[in-house]
Length: 362
Length: 198
Ligand SMILES: Nc1ncnc2c1ncn2[C@@H]1O[C@H](COP(=O)(O)OP(=O)(O)O)[C@@H](O)[C@H]1O
Ligand SMILES: [Mg+2]
Ligand SMILES: [Zn+2]
Image 1 (cartoon, chains in turn blue, green):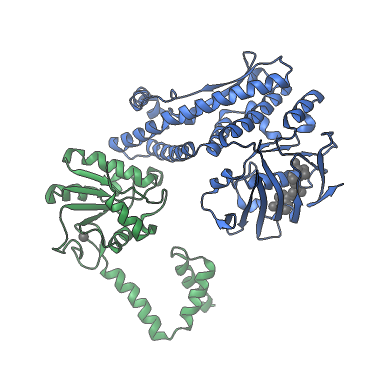
Image 2 (cartoon, helix red, strand yellow):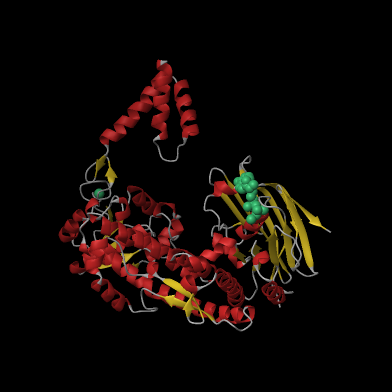
């Protein structure tokens, strides 16, 4: 079985790191250190290599070390026998550099063809607890990673939606223009809903299997898609929905039909976790979701991605930790950060992080 | 004191130009200050004259120094085709290909309610009048391949329906989300050849 490995990483001018060179093990890599020393920053750098995005910020500036003008990340990634060098850089004036094997690439998303990671941060609990916007963002990000068609459609959809909402709010009176924008939204909405439905269905199946294991067979988890537009609906049918909503649209001056109103629910043993779940149940459900994502990426791309666990491992109870380690063992390169010592088995590489310097413990 | 005021004013003027930041503006301003006075006068006169002579072609809406413009008044150009573009610079880009021998119509923008631009803000009414009068066979919509350009193209296709005229759009090979003027000549020439009915 082939899986993805990050063999080495070099970071310069990134967050609180001046310059570090590291090589990692194929199994579990433990990142230990007190709070505020740079553990999350390192995980963030690793994740950044998978597509030039950080879950913590959209601003390039924030990623650059306070007293530097640019950052640079270089990773050596192995898939089976193949070795690839990935490089990314960013400067204060907004310029960016992305290279694969020394060749500049224009589409950041090309990186996810070579390097992919699933990141689990403490704030991911909001996926269960918070409002629908955060779940839609999750859907868009994750689906875009594995499906180019989805990425193109959703980007386009959002731009047309912005224009249509602006038209509804403006005093431009033009029925033909409204019809043109409505047609475009309707055209894009059906396929987007269909891809979301397929994705959630697969994710739900995989998450249920994981969740059953973690909960010792006591809990049945499922994800339920709440769609605005029926998945794969014909354009005429969606246009009919828009017709029915004309009054309401005029009143609210915004588009009230379409994937931007979608949501999905976490359901355990028939009840919705967002309102009825305990904190522990919610946390476990997110873990199951992240592991399902891992399996889905493996199914779509042929390789397991990396798993980055930020501060969450130490919050799991004994039984869940064991099940997780057993699940990961030998096939998924994992990075676990913690401020307390954790027992993660024998085949572990341990790194000690202090004020932006990293030393391996041997 | 006065010297610094006028220098600051000059720098501010340069900064209004696209792609010029404060550093470049400063450099240009100091360069001007070092030029011999007659040259500075000529520079300023060229700016004012170009602006004064600048006209909008009453037929196609392109920028020109004579009305109608040299393309509209060229008898060798075919009347069968009207290529609709967003900006005067798109005409230049298409002319560079030497591939197209028809007429142009410049919209002076693209539909974007987000920026407060609806169809009435664009040069569309004159296009309709022109089609009624000149009766071309085909309208080639060459708006940019981004959301605004696409919305504009679809809008044109819709309002041109009653005319029973062929409406095509450049699509092939153009970088998605990009601007027409940045497409290389080869790509543009191919896009012209491979235009599709909309
Ligand atoms: N752009 C930056 N430049 C320098 N230091 C930064 C930057 N961004 C964050 N930091 C520092 O990084 C530290 C937090 O690192 P982090 O990885 O989140 O800690 P932890 O080890 O608790 O996960 C803070 O001390 C913060 O000041
Ligand atoms: Mg942290
Ligand atoms: Zn003209």
